[in-house]
Length: 436
Image (cartoon, rainbow, N blue to C red; front, side):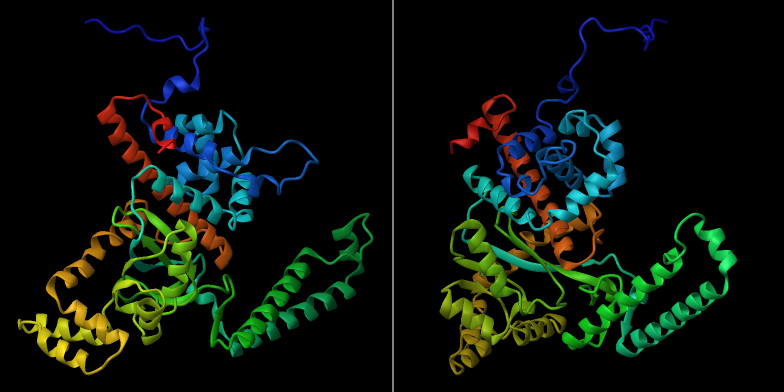
């Protein structure tokens, strides 16, 4: 038998290899690297101090995070390990190895600036010609918060906890005053009047409970989660109710995300107007056609879309959906004529939309939204496993969802670029597209 000779790991190489040699042409990390280099990151860079040791470049950290989010890797410790052991992460980091705390702080601190990065990527998608603007599908999906349901408390429960913590503080102080010798043992050569660590923790907990109680009163809420006060109970699939966020996404027919948000309201009814405004702000283009389910339907939303914005909207009201489902369940044809006659007697934007949806081809257009928006959430939640958030508070959670959306759009660019380069036989570069 003939075998290749076993390698000698101690043998020095005549010409040291480059990390670039180990990353194949056409890999998504090359696309991420080139795109992020073209992005304007001054909003992040200007927040760094000139003092101290030089920091890791924000573009490098952004590249690493976006590749991580495009492949389903999120925890900062696993990303740190990947930067030391995975060739693709080493390529993006330039062989630098940011520790998990650096990665974690970057993601938390610049959650707001993620929106600006997202807008730049959206506009790049348009410049590259991989998506059209004007036609939008809108939907929301629940992602679980990083908070236990057991930590959601009522006003009475918070007040009871506060009384318990106050009693624990009084007991701890009494024990400290009565034990001079124990103090000397605990504090050594220190002054001896510092608060013990356990007592500091109790004081911090009491402060947190006071803040939660104040917010519960100010916002006139019945319950509040002590771990993440912005998270609310929401119903997920199969009727499971947990603290969660309602993630909003607006996509084009080509499944490019053009706007996103995370909100604390479990229902979608208040999100149509804000999302339309975000779409137009991000794209610089007015929404011409909008498809959304009945969760967004209200008379105010119909007036806003039909009369104020002149949008060609495909959004059934709940009675329309209920009637249609009833007919399907009983195996009967949908009584569209009855709906049309009823609509003509009502004279409202809701009636106009209902009458439009009674036309089969228009209803099919509305149904096409499920092939545009639902695969996006399906990829994020089931292919990549993003069913819950790692960060807490709406600001940070929105930044995390923004990273998911940017990574998703980068994947769309990479796939479009791969197809284009395959047809043209060009090298692995985006130069062909920057001039579009």
